[in-house]
Image (cartoon, rainbow, N blue to C red; front, top):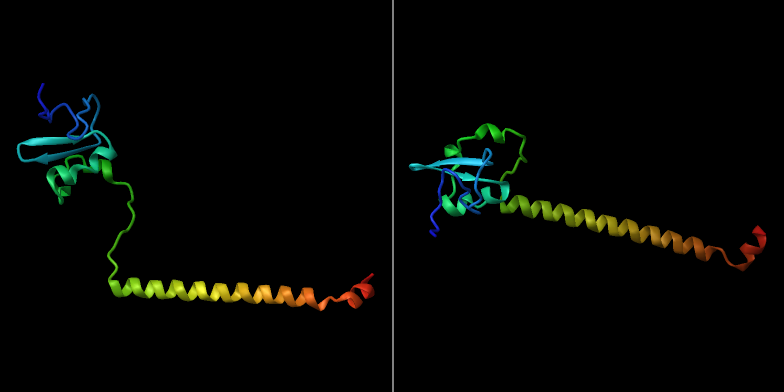
Length: 118
C-alpha cells in the first residue's frame, strides 16, 4: 500500500474517497487538489503554502459574506486597551457609589426611625 494521494479521487488531507463535489478544489501545478470539508480545507496552507486563493477552482462556493478582518496597529490596540480600562474604572466607581448609597440608606434607619414607621 502506498501513501501517495490520488488527487482525482480523494481528499489531500484525510484521504477520504470523494464521491460528491469537494468542499474546495485548488489547481496546483499539474494536479487539482481537493479538500472534502472545512476542517481539511484549513490544512491547505500547510500542504501547498499560503496565497492559493487565485488558484481555487470553485470560488462560487465561497460567495457568502465573511467577517471583515483588518489589521490594527499596536498604537490602535493600545488606545482600545486604554478605552476599555477607562470604561472598567468608571463602572467600578459607579458600583462603589451604588454600594455606598445602599450602605447610607441602611444606616439612616435606626431604631427610632423604625418605630416611627410602624
